[in-house]
Image (cartoon, rainbow, N blue to C red; front, side, top):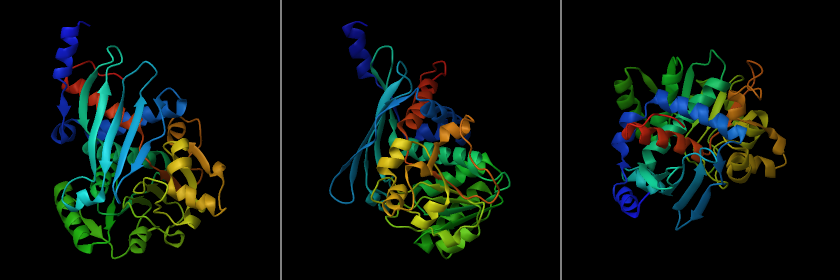
Length: 332
């Protein structure tokens, strides 16, 4: 590429903002992309390093997640700041961009809004795990938390399977009721509000913890046999949404074994108590999807999927959006 063309390409890098991601990345498309790319992660054909989290003034974090869809495929990184106070001001707690580089030219070719793509790919991953691990007849969904992931998880999981009831619990009853009303009206269904996390859990056979709580909000005695849990909200080793005795009793799966061992707060706390060892991580979800590892074995087992978020999910979704936006032939 000539110097002139290279400079021209750099000066016209498209930014795919929140509105573009909302419009182009449907629940179904995100589900399909995440399902495919997590199988690639488990096969070892993607490239990534452990997520970097730099603590700043409490409670802010600066994060960087680098990776590639293949050794010779599209590559890039998600760079973002994380601060729950952003959400209190009506914005996303995750602010930043996914940077996409073309594998042939090596040029930065697109920037994608990190908040919206994170929200959608995370919920899609939970929907994928739910389809792989929940009982076929599981149809009662409980959402513990009322942040941005609560809404996206309701959308993704009700899109992926037939859900007969949805219940929300949050520390703010007012916020939970407002979300239930607004989202229920939009989706054309009744969404219930529970007075406690225990009440919500006992109504459900699919539970998503999306609170970001530092200490457990879901206890072993509240979870019925046969339940599937998506543990999503805690994103570093110092936070855990799930009680240790519950973690020890489940069939435990994750998006990344390396990530769960280093940054999965629920696993780390339970391991430090001596209740589990590293073999408690049965498989990455990609191996379950490809049939290389068994998932649920019986109707009464409790399964748990630990989601820490994976750069391959961001890159797969971001690259497809880049292709759509630039009318390129879709491929990964």
